Structures are given as C-alpha cells and as structure tokens.
Image (cartoon, rainbow over all chains, first blue to last red; front, side, top):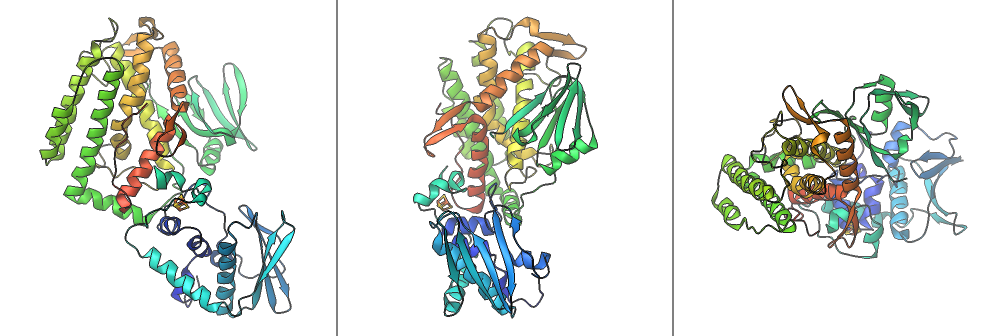
Length: 169
Length: 322
Ligand code: SF4
C-alpha cells in the first residue's frame, strides 16, 4: 500500500459493494469471517499494487471476474463483467469507489459495467458522485466499527448468499 | 462436483504425476479426481510423496492419519487459508474470562447430556439427566464440570448396556488400548469423528487450539474435542449401536492384540463404510429449512460458535431432533 494513502482509501471495493447488499455480510466480511468461494469481486487496491501499472494489459482474469484496463490517451477504462442486474446499485457504487480511488491517486478513469448476457453495457463516471462515494465510505467505516454484527434481516438475497447458514442457523 | 471424504485402508503409495493424484496398492494404480476430494483418512501404511503433499496443500485438502488401533495420530493440514485476527482475539477472550469460559464449557456438556438422553430414548430406555444437568448451574470450576460430564457418561453407558447384545457390553469404558469389543468400536468411531471435526474447523476461521471445556494444549486441536462432546452420541454412538445390534459387526471382526482388542481389517472396512455413509446422510434442518448432511451439522455448530464469540447470537448446542 502507498504509505500516503488516506485512511478512507484502505477500504476494499468489496466492502463498498456489500454495503449495498447487506450490512451483516459487510460486518462479517470485514472482520475476517469470509465464506468459501467468497471471491466474487476483485480488490482493485491490491491489484494496482501487485500489477504496478496498467500499460496495455487486457483481459485480466481474477477469480470469476474479468477486468480490462485499456489505456486511451489519459483516460483509463475499467471494465467489469457482470452476470445480471440484481445487484446493480452495489456494482455501480463499487465502480464509483474505484474511480474515486483512482482520482485520489491522480488518475483519470471511467468504468464500464458489462452485462454480456443482456448484451448491454453501462458507463459510469465519477463526476457528481463524489459525495455519494464519501458517504458510502463513512457508512462502511461505521458498520465495521460496530462491536457486534448487525442483526441479519431475512430477504430474498439470503437464499443465494454465502452467509446464509451462518446467519440463519 | 460434490466433494467426498477419501478413506485409504490398504497399504500403498499416494503420488502425483502432472495434475493427477494416484493411489497405488497391491491391486494396481488408480487415479483419484482431486477436485472431488474433501479430505483424506489414512488407516493403512501409506507412503506419500512430497509432490503429492504439495498438491494436497495447494488444493486445501487435509489428511488425517490413524494408527494400528484406528486412533488418531495427527493431520497434515495445509497452511491455514482462512484467518481472522479479530475472531482469534475473541476466541482467546472467551477463554481468559472465567465466566465466559464456564458458560461455553457447560453448554458443551449440556449438549452432550441431552444427546445421550436422546439416544437412550431412541433405544427405548427411560432416562432423564435433568438432575445431573441441574448440578451444572452451580458449578464454578472446569474440573467440576468435567466431573458432572463423567457421571452422566457413566450412567449413559450403564443404561446403554441394557440394550446391547451379549458380548458387546461396554461395562467399563476403557481406552488406549481398549479392553473389549464395544470399547474398541466406540474408540475407533470417535477417532474418525474427531478427525472430521478437525477438517470442518479447518474450513472456518476458528482456531482449533483454543477451547473451553478441554484445556487448550491438552491436545493440539482441543476445540475439536469440545465439539466432539456434542457429536459423539449422535454420530459415533448411533453407528456403533446399529452395527452391533443388527449383527453387522460380530465377534469375528475383532482380534486380540498384545495390548487389547482391536477391529481387524474386515471390521475396519465395515465400520468405515458405515460412518462414511452416516456422515453423508441428510436431515431436514428446522431453522435453515433445507436438508443438510450430518457432517455439515458439525460446520453449522462451528458457525454457531463464531456467532457466540462475536456477540451475534448466544450459542445453543445442537440437540438431535432426528
Ligand atoms: S444471509 Fe441474508 S442477512 Fe445474512 S449476510 Fe446474507 S444477505 Fe445478509
């Protein structure tokens, strides 16, 4: 990690994502209680440091996700390939967080969410959403700092959630 | 692919060539689909090449070793992949705080007692351990909890004996080495169960070395000993009971050894098949509203413990409803 990286950027993309899915899940995840095959999202921060810089790298596969970093002039495109729209808000916020992250590092970028099954794409730009990201970061920090996990609330999401057994046993 | 436990009972060699794991014994060499292996239980004399070990470590597969008597010797356990510093601290806190430790230790004994009671009811023996379990409430020392547990167990074995066929009475529960058939059978099954609990704990963030009823360091994976209190009656004892009462396991499946009685190879084969099947049997979980295998119940117990430790929900030991 960049030693000068501000604290709020030590949050992982997954945590922003989980904030918009379930707070219980976020709490467990951020306290190290992860479930098997819990590798849905790439941690961009880690990735940037491992791969140093983007260059012309394409189609980087990490777990089940493919990301393209394409350098276009001074704009970088982050491509995320998604299965469906059910978690759209979470995906968008995670992408916005990455863009915010990159901006703080002085890198201009935009994100594209790809839905190959739906033959659709969605472009995400940070402009105007900075405050949303900052609010999300703050909320993540608040939930992480709770001394006990938020009480789970049963919803449709639970059925497919890797934490189902932990929450409901 | 549904992952399964692999049991190696015969002597042989476990090796790796390219991306395939092979087991070679007197019958020949057969490839093993690594993606389908959950964990491995080794009862025979098995040579394992270091390449095979590297491969298993890479895939996160634990191997458990058993001695001549079928007692647990130890495990090869891939470098731990799941960590949570936070949970580890909470686990230790619950050990160091006397009240917190006593609470958990008692709950393990309550679970054990209730499950023994359930077994006896299944076997049509009238019993209630209420009196003994009530004593637990007042107790303030781990050794006293252990003492209550021992008394419950004593009573349990004596009552169980009343339904066991002649020649298979437990009489006095002995261990290391077992002095009679039923003791040999129970020990063999308990060892296998213990190893399975080790496997399940490996797949969680719980540290298997911090325990509550048993003293940490008493044996290496003392948390597996704590959990085995709950599962011995409902898994090992039930299998043992069934095998002897249905006459599947007979006197001829044992032999006398210099130091005691032990299962012979045929006996081990039968018992291992039975316990493997038992672990894969599923029951409807009333809370989760889905079917889970008996083996999965162990994992669920670990999850309940995690929730207790982080303050999400108080631990309630599993009492068999099935
Ligand atoms: S099972 Fe439901 S409540 Fe639990 S973490 Fe998942 S979504 Fe949240």
